[in-house]
Image (cartoon, rainbow, N blue to C red):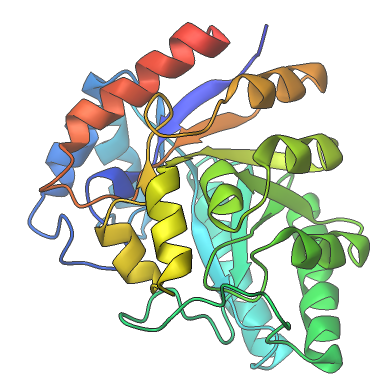
Amino acid sequence: MLKVKVAAQPIIWSNDDFHDLGGNTPLEQCLKEMRQAGYEGTELGHKMPKNAELLLPLLKENGLQLVSGWHSTYLASRSFQDETTDFKAHMKFLKDMGCKVVIAAECTNRVYHTPGKALDWEFAQSPFDESEWKKITTGLDEFAKMAEGQGMKLVYHHHMGTGIQNLRQIERLMENTKHLWLLGDTGHLAFAGENPAEVFETYKSRIGHVHLKNVRPDIVRTARFNHWSFDKAVREGVFTVPGDGGLDFKPIFQIMDGVNYEGWFVVEAEQDPVKANPLEYAKKGRAYIQQTAGV
């Protein structure tokens, strides 16, 4: 049986990239409903104070633990010294919060946060040249070693609308790093046209964190056919929670159970909260995991 804890991402209530989605939802409501839906933890959201002295009591009051938080790297376009300074500050904050995982994603040339900017649906070529790839892989592995020194894992979040979004790009990243872990995100894999279970099977020994997000296949197809932007796809409902949508999560649970994964499962759904009631979908996702994975 899986020995995991289940958390929810605040993006279910208030979107980190498109602040008008859930922009009027108070943080207190988000945390209260998160706990009400049965979650034990949360990841960092943009409305949360980035100060452990302020955030720790706020989460404790709601019976929640901070699991991790996203960090944007720009290793391909900024100096390694500046990147290191920012990374160390973020890592210290997470460690002060009791986190064991640091999430990172290379955001040089990203397009997902730009409304109207079409995604690279053909994956014809990488947005990084050879020297940039070298900076990214070398830098991330150095950061991963820094995290190891603090008793933490650095996990890489592949993400639609970035330079590392499909299997070919993930393979290149993992082949050229030794200390870096992978964040397996079911929704982003499916959106990129990959089979999540196959990717999880391939990298099961290096998956250090899991995001459980579903997709609506008809909207994925429409988005690809019409060359939608990430913003457009999100607003049209491409993502939803486990228990809704087209993915079967049973193989994922079996794979992670097989490698004795003891981290967190984090439920996500980047939806318009006006169209998809956050508490309702948070409960749906939590119930599905309880029924299907027994946790």
